[in-house]
Length: 50
Image 1 (cartoon, rainbow, N blue to C red):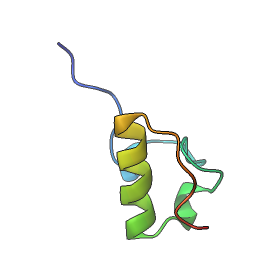
Image 2 (cartoon, rainbow, N blue to C red; image 1 turned 90 degrees about the vertical axis):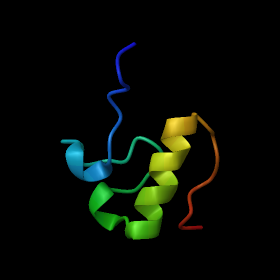
Image 3 (tube, helix red, strand yellow; image 1 turned 60 degrees about the horizontal axis):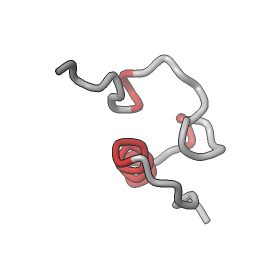
Image 4 (cartoon, one colour; image 1 turned 90 degrees about the horizontal axis):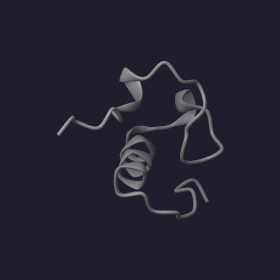
């Protein structure tokens, strides 16, 4: 089975987070971990910035 293509935010050439409405550059370390985990598991939950 192939590995998922989702990786850490730094490894993707995307400027907008696919999980929350913020730009990737606006994420701190906790925000990156939160969005990475949210995406990995496929959850739909609010933004950690709220």
